[in-house]
Length: 247
View 1 (cartoon, rainbow, N blue to C red):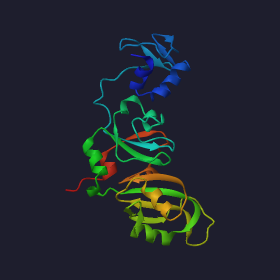
View 2: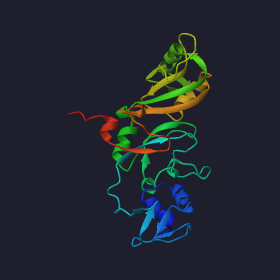
View 3: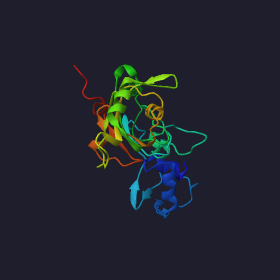
View 4: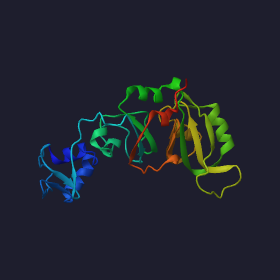
């Protein structure tokens, strides 16, 4: 197996990341520093990273069922795309490449994604009948009279043949603002059932320019409750996302 594939399977990073580890001389095989990306290794070889031995784990029944990923802007929520090499999976270790995602974020949006190897969990999060709400923080180019916007968004906005509705709209209060009373540039928007690019479409219909769209919460899992840097992942449980099952 090529050294970069071997290291990626160890969970040391994406293929691109582990190639950087090799080229920077941080990997040794049987005591010798390796900088050749075509170098072949086997399970019998002794491999170390920054002087610490690493080894291949058994084929992972040890893989976590669900991970939370903090998506940066500029990355596609896709396994691959012929027009963009920057997908979320280019930031994730090899062991997560076959995971599926429970709902997308578009290229320019960022924030919480859930990925899982459990199809039942994906269905629970994405199926409209389960009404798993999602919260987004948006930054606007200009302050808006938020109560009027909230009324319109919750009543429903017609766009592209769809009626797009929000469950809740209110000021996000993420930073101190010097705006007139009743105006804000930061909105918290909660959706029960999100259609493709729904928030951006609703804002465009009202001539509001979105500078940043950040998904902060899915169900009960809220990025404000723990530290998760952009481009990083964290193992989570179904209970953290959906809450305790009812009796």
